Image (cartoon, rainbow, N blue to C red; front, side, top):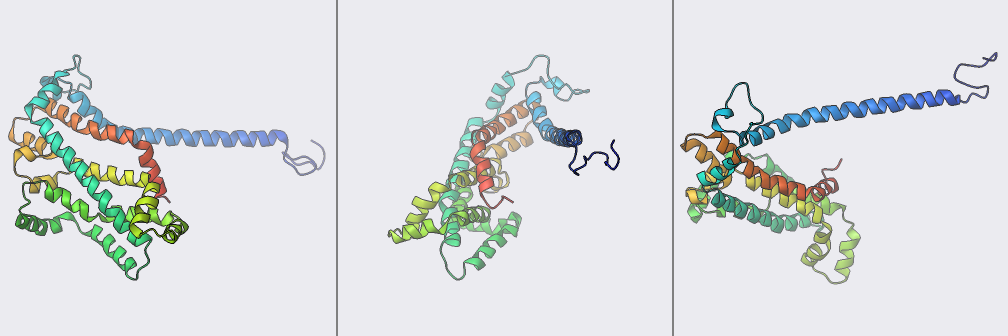
Length: 302
């Protein structure tokens, strides 16, 4: 090393080429180690969510004597695929499936009709009390369902809607606070110039909503429909309260009644539960791209 020269630097003060390469290699190792640690953590967390699902699937393929065996048997030596046939025959599965499908599709249609109208009025139409109304709508999200359960039941009973799907479906056509907020946040990101140009061309507010904003809002509308469909598919308390005829039960209530009124055959119950979960999984993976795009485009981002 020449006199006056510092380690790692040449006479001009610039870092040496070898020193920069070593620093870059160190940074790459740190980034690689961080990425590896994050992936391992994500894998461990994912296993925590996947293990109950895997246990349900493998239990659905076991003979009865292996369901509660100790030590546990993760995969049966001879999978019983006929458990799925027995599960479908043990309960009116397809009737429950049809009832749940009607409930989910009708309620999803309801929020797609009602929520964009309210969200558009809160986002694009200027009127004095719209901020106060938005706060009031958001405040309704703080009221738990058990608080309104009895008044709603009395109201629907006086309307003669008990033991029908109307108490489950009709409220969706009256709006949902969370979906209204979600759509409002998205509508706020659409430039005002588009709405103003349509107004200059003579379009009404409803035409602006239907012909300008909704075609641009397909991702977030898909998110709203998917959320509502999944809520209806997994809803247990609502059908339990309003439905009394066993032929009108949904899957959640029907399987619970089967578990409570018969000797529990866990292999068949797990087979039926797997069949209940499969449509929602298929729906999620089919709409995954649109679903994630809708989430990132709305106010949930950042």
